[in-house]
Image (cartoon, rainbow, N blue to C red; front, side, top):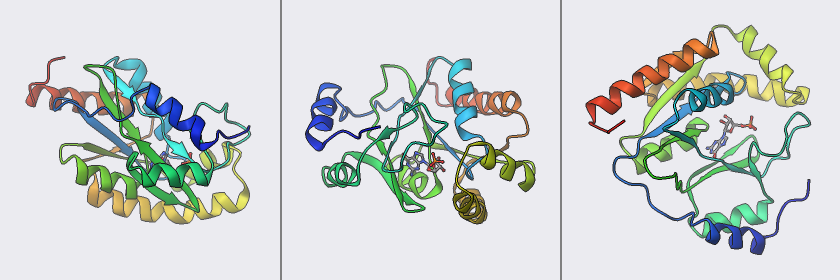
Length: 209
Ligand code: 5GP
């Protein structure tokens, strides 16, 4: 899949007004957790269950996987990503296993809350920018299950080994940072647990539903 050039990207960015700031009531919900834990699946289920949620689409320099359709990320070259960093385009970005991943400053439709599905270094930056961001650490019931999920995604064997190694780092650092830990033993159950926590937070912050 060809990646767009710098000028093309900025034409699109300007059209869609990427730089609009979030309103004070907007809840920023961050999902972190090791690769293969099911963050993407849980994020999609959260969006189906709660129409107030809006999922941010990340940028990455990694190549799309054979199993991906191309909509999972905005796939860009390193040149485009570096240019975006220099323009302060991202609200957070990180290097994960040699590829760059970043969240554009979010611009959700009015009244919607933002969901970010990111790794722990980026989540720390989000927390620094927005002290009210709510961070959920998703964990797997067992390591065996995590390994099985990683293999099912069609990653190369060496990537799987590296990602399993970084699991401990993601979980240990995630536990320090996260407000809530949710075990993804079942997507439906885990998603509903997150939604019930969000509902409580909205009530306590008097955010109109
Ligand atoms: P993957 O290559 O498996 O899609 O993603 C690798 C890791 O990068 C995952 O932990 C994923 O959650 C994280 N990630 C995805 N998008 C972003 C982003 O915009 N920022 C950061 N910091 N991490 C991201």
